[in-house]
Amino acid sequence: MAQPFDLTVAEIQAEIASGALSPVELVQSLIDRAVAVDPKVQAWETLDAEGALAAAHSAQAQLRHFPARPLEGVPVGIKDIFYTAGLRTAAGFAPFDGLVPDYDATAVARLREAGATILGKTVTTQFAFSDPPKTRNPWNQDRTPGGSSSGSGAGVAARLFPAALGSQTAGSVLRPAAYCGVVGFKPSFGRISRFGVLPLSWSLDHVGIIVRTVVDAGLVYQAIAGGDARDPACLVLPVPNVTEATHPPAAAPKLGLVLDFMERAEPEVREHLEAVTMRWERAGAEVRRVRLPLSLDTVLATHQVVMQSEAAAAHSANLTAHPADYRPLLRAYVENGHLIPAAAYVHAQRLRSRIKTQVESLLDRLDAFLMPTASNVAPGPATTGDRSFQAMWTMLGAPAIALPSGFDASGMPFSVQLAGRHLDDGGLLATARWCEANLDPMPAPLL
Image (tube, rainbow, N blue to C red; front, top):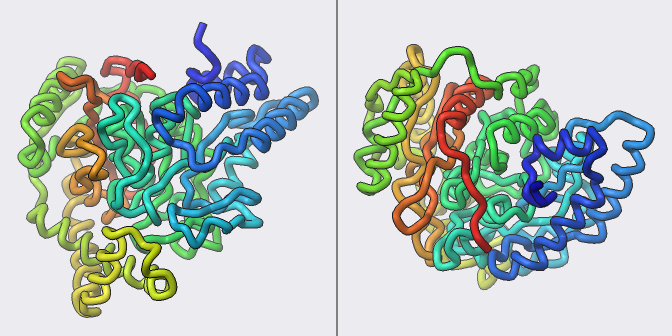
């Protein structure tokens, strides 16, 4: 029988609802797991053992009188840029060491409303940018876990928690998921509120989900998606029932293998995805080779201008007040962002809109785009990795998901990426569930 810490969100949901597992037993298992494993991985910024046990006891009492809520007793790690009532939110920035919010970010509040237990805060790169974190990859501690949701990705892989919240402005949910061998889901822009999340780039920041299965991604998404007037970009639209979408669809999907990304991938990554593609084709999928309607360099340059301009605006006052506390990559990025002319930013935003229209037209005869999640497997710890394969879908606000798909010769995880049409999150999850069902299950790293 699996240890409680090894259960997925869906398995926890079933075990707790049936009475076979208590929320207290589960939280204690994860606290013990953290003591044994986290010194090697360093995924936790703040493990709130006392608060999590109190919440688990409360959930256990609730279950004596009421039906289980959707995420009753499910422990979740929260990236340390999300406000959490009563828990420090430092964002890797020394002047914020004493910042203890008195309210939750909307996504955190909705997790609590769904019955989830907030287990603590996970390590982030400073303000969710590119300066490397202390966290290590569970598969090899000499490799990066990716960034900026470093602790969230590594912690889910290391079985420190079954689910985590992250954020993505370029590739910071999907890349840690890919490098750590788990599932990372970045929903459509506007589907999950960013209220209470420290910003890096207002028009690019997304809340994302890191879990171990597509079904789990749907369960967490269902709990936290939806309109919020406190985030002006959050869409007031009905949220589809994506938990139904995560059952494998009757028909195999039609996928567009994006050659522009394949040609930039390292040879072993390219060869691996070709093998995965053949496997899916044998299972009934239709895979077409497609090209982007314009240069990938143009797409990435557009994203860079938008992100750097907005990061400069978001961090201008803080950098002026605390220049010595900024890590070198973020400080240089913000300082250089001030040199970008306003005309260039406006032009990039107009080009961004045109790119979105042109790219989405390719999906008229496809269920999703297919490409590697990153150009490489996890490199060394001096970097958080290559964000160029994820940034395009962030800029377009399109839903994207990373699926673990195997291992290279050194035992590091490979990952494939699917991207869909804006607001068709349920459709992408349905496609991802079919693809996942036709891949080998991912084992746990040996720690």
